Image 1: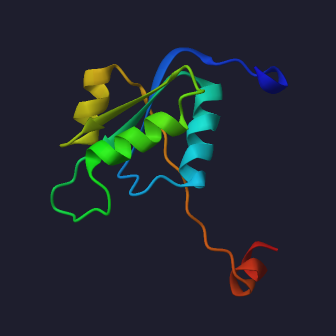
Image 2 (image 1 turned 90 degrees about the vertical axis):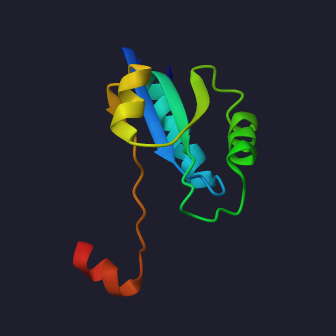
Image 3 (image 1 turned 30 degrees about the vertical axis):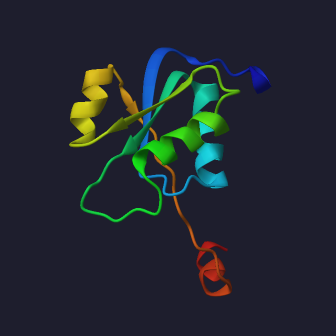
Length: 111
């Protein structure tokens, strides 16, 4: 483990999303999660109400390839409610990212 951190023992985390397409930001969150949790499931949402750029199968394949070096990361697909999916996989943590747009007008608010 880096910087003396250890993984949370036997904690399964789910990182849900459409990942259409997967980005470097997504991959950063997956890698960070893999250092914190015993197991991370990247759960690709099959939302049939949207018209995605890539199919669920293509998105899943890209994520599998991009995370192949992370031994505790698995990739799955799901539809329906996230809470039901997480419960079915024994997960106790939901991992989420945060999108932030930083402009000169917002920087004064954080000074």
